[in-house]
Image: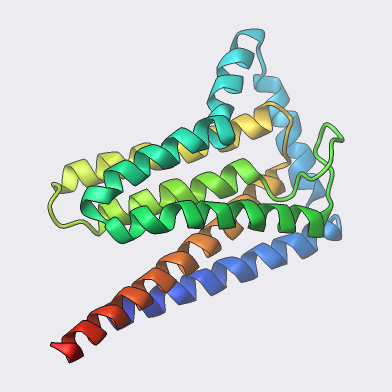
Length: 211
């Protein structure tokens, strides 16, 4: 069963990574500019002065001001129930920062407001990894009731969607930037879970042999 799960994780990571690179190529060729411009025009119709401040507040969840407290809180909670993830999470998120910078440098795509490094969305990438991991641990937990697991997972996913929308609303990203952040974030997350699961399996096997 564990072997099947690790194969699914690795396969999902590969598919997501391929999707990211395919999207990057299409963006470089300007093949999806109609989608980007169309989405930008649609979002402009939704803008209202009263919404600007709430959008600016929500978008902060995906930058350092929001991520650092979330990571610290997650480490504290995970220390009691998933100690290996409590140790791995800060390293995992540091890797997210490095991955984001490398991807942005490689794409070198300006944002809709003409500031640099828009592709992929770092806010979406970071939250997909952090909250996606929380969703994974919630859904694979055995103790919480099913309704609680569904509600908690839905809350995490809602945060990702809300922050992604704020990046479009505030004209900080194109739709394809957001999609790329989702794809590379999912690939990174699934690969990280796969690595940790493989390490845990091998460590358990080693303890069993020694006993």
